[in-house]
Length: 300
Image (cartoon, rainbow, N blue to C red; front, side, top):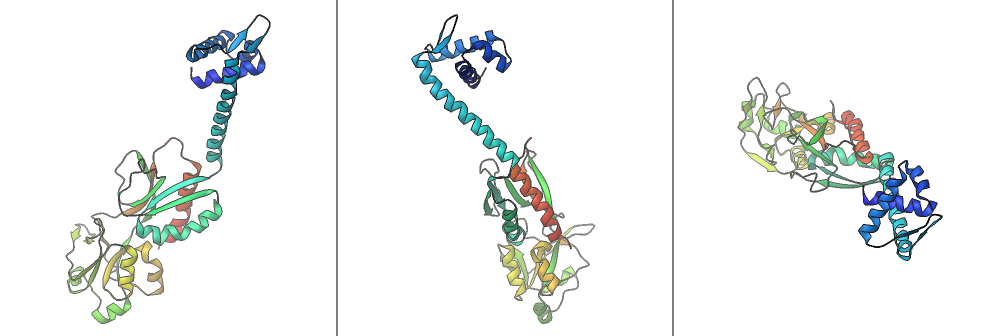
């Protein structure tokens, strides 16, 4: 029997003036109520109630205890209501960690629309390439590229990365257009310096790690894009990062008959969250919003 239940019994007995009435309200035997009141008095080391055959009254200590127990029960009810409200209506703080490139290119442009739909959610956004601990850092959703290795978490796919080789029309006009992977040795190549993206693979029946020379290394996807847009060379980047530039012709898809990747496998970007029986309303609506809005913005 929890201390809170004893408080509830005690308050009910005081307010109804009757153990039998309290027993009917809680649907328990009167003897059970009496035992729990006795345990409460033993724990406190003081008598709370003066009982006679006709009536029941509070002792001085009982009156003081009742004043506090009312507030405790009231706070408990308020806490339950606050939690239930969070589940019923999306609100409260929502902490999101995301990779810099995907965050800047895809997530951040969607945030104003999300806030219009859910103005009671307070967002805290972190853009980082480091591996985050959802539990220790109290993160609700992490957006990452690659495989899910922790079985205590759930991953919801947001987009296939669909890496493609590209260059600006100006660069290709000046240096020529490579026709095969071997031709890359003669070109300036721009690497993304993140450890999992810095290698280039030709995805065929047998995956081949490509040798590229004359490289520029940059630690952001947007940095890659600015370099390639301004004639810095060829680069390998995901479609979601340069869909607009590919469509308007400011970037040219090179060697489109080949499939390239910075991994030894085709990868995706995921929203990752802790495996829980009950996911909060704020997290649920954010995940649903991402799936609904990102799919239409990242497909070809």
